Structure formats: structure tokens, C-alpha cells
Image 1 (tube, helix red, strand yellow):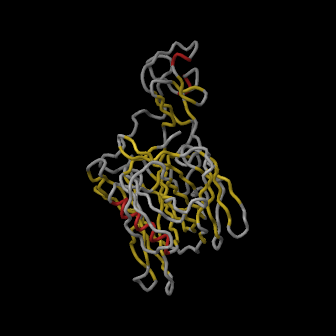
Image 2: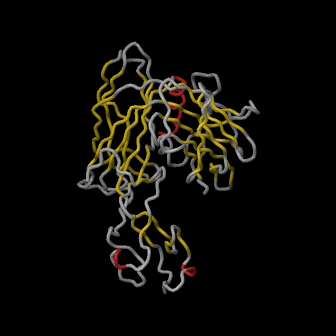
Length: 384
């Protein structure tokens, strides 16, 4: 599977520098971009590896398949292997790092190229409280839609520690109920995959267009933050910081939602990295919209000290809190209109009439596969 993202701008940080600086740079093929995160929270660690390609339609990043990827404990040499899954590399589901440990990243591409990160120490987390969601019908402006979109602003009260310099970064995962688990475009779902109609025997089916297949049980879609929220306590004397903005949860659907916010403690060098990244992302419509930002961080090629390696590896502790948000009564239109098919009705029961699941003679449902973007495990804080 190839994941492509378009971009028009790179910003570099020089190795050994605290403050980022603007470089002179020429676009070219073959630039490696690595986004890697190791967390004290299970299920929050990942590595993304891509390569720049210059094409007639612009510049893009293509996911690099077949890499060998490891997290390495710098203290005891423990190695954790990551596996490739849907355009990303993931450690085992129960993998977590611990406060006080130091970790680094090792990558070897299929062509033999190697990349490593500097060792990153896991700092102790800082507590927060009073997670709140405030609805705004014009929460942020999305450049790709050329309009303001609705959503909830997340705020917290931060319990900052006096006499320490602390740097904070917030990420979130949101969970919303998913009814449709598979869509086959001009195909039909059989034995776990979409296949062509002509490959179906003795069912008398014709190509009637696209088909949506209901989940075979409880299922939640997982989304992630699209912008960056940071805070430095350099100019405060510790204590409680009230109503600090930590996330923007957009109204993609009117389904109720659970948001799990992670407050991450960063070293100053990584804070500087994310600060420049934030400036670029804010000007380019979010992390998931083109053009994504890329920075030179703490990753290098041990065999070629002149190669620019874009991106960074972060090993960090986090404090987590979940919040249920009821969105059923919101009058504004969602960004992604919800599919009108109900959980009792699916296409393709052999004739044009839509039967219930029990009336269909063959598979009309699809499994809720556990991935980074989907789960059948009820999220903490979910209210039925």
C-alpha cells in the first residue's frame, strides 16, 4: 500500500542548533522523511517512513515499504521490532516505555540504507485537570474547504511545577461509532476482501455499483489531531494555568465521541522542533492536509553525515485523560455527512430489496479489524 502526501515546503533545523533557522534548499527526489514516536501509553507509538518524489503534478511523499524498524533501549540494549501495517510501522500493541529510560530509533531500508536517531530520555510527566470541550460553530478555518468548520475546543487546567522549565505538547485520539466497516467500489465483499462480480459463482449478481457493508459488531473509528498545541512555562512561575487550549476536535460527523488527550513532556530541543513544525502546519491547513511540513530533527544516516534526514524521533511520557462529548443535538452540518444506510440494512442480498442481516444467504457484514484507525474495544469513557 502506498500513502501519498503532497507538499511544497521544507524547513530545516541544523544539527547541534537549539533555534531553528531558514535554509536555502532545492527540491529533489530521494529525501527521506521519518516521523517516529515512542510513548508511555500503550497503542500510541509508531514510525512513519516516506521518500520525496518530484513529479509533473508537484512534490509528494511516498510511503517506504519493506523497512526493518526497531526501537532500542539505550540503557540495556533491549530491541523492540516494529511491523508494517497499512502504511505505518507499529510496535506490539502492549508496548510502552518508562519514565527515566532512554530510547533511540534504528531503521534499515530494503536497499540497505540505515538511519538512526539520537538517544532521547523519557522525562517525568506533569499532571493536568479539568478537561473541557467547548463547541464553536466556526472553530477553525480549513483552507482545503475554503471555509470555517464547526467543532469543539479542548481546554485543561495545567498543574505546572515551579522552579522547573517544562515544555508541553498535546496529542489526542478520538473515537466515534462506526457502522460501515467496508465499502467495495463496483465490487462485492467476500471472504474478507472486495472482489469482482464476475468471480462470484451461483449467486446471480450483477454489477450494481458501490456497496457498503455493516460492521459485524461494535466498532469505533479513531481519528488523530490535525494541528499542534504547545506550551512553554518560561514566563510563568508555576502553579495552575487555567483554560489552556490543547486540541481542536472537528465535527466530521454528528456521532457522539470520546476524546483521549495526551499531555506530553518534551525536552527543550524537541519543543523547538515542534514549534517550527506548528508554524508551518498552521499555515498549511493541518497535519493531514497538503502540504505537510518536514523538518530536520534528531535522525541521521550513520554512513553519510551529509545526507539531510527530515523528521524526528520523540520518546516521551504522557498524562492521559478521556472525555465523552454528546454531539447529537448540534444543528450545524458535519464535514463528512453520515452514510444513510442503517445498521439493519445492507446492499446486495441478491435482489434490489434490502433485507435484514439474518435474511441474507451469504456474508453481508464486514469485520472490525484492529488497526491504528479502528477498534472493536470500547474506549475508556464511552457512554451508550
